[in-house]
Image (cartoon, rainbow, N blue to C red; front, side):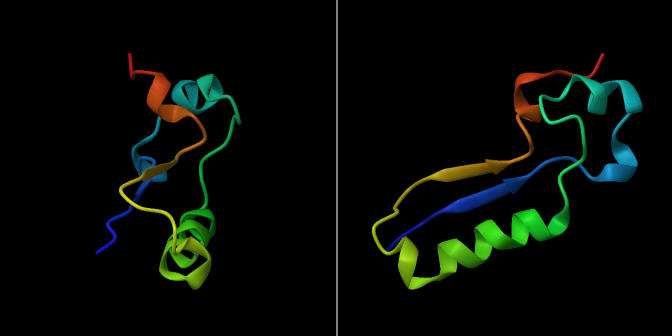
Length: 66
């Protein structure tokens, strides 16, 4: 059994402009970018991937809301 996870960033409606400006990519992650990771994890190409968490958030996890 394989268990992977894709963790999208915050909902765009909940993000402050100053928070987005601090991200290394300086934009909000698009839902299609998260969908691409999920599609990969569901494909045969990810057969050897196991127990991983893919943060699809443009490095937002390293910053904190002030």
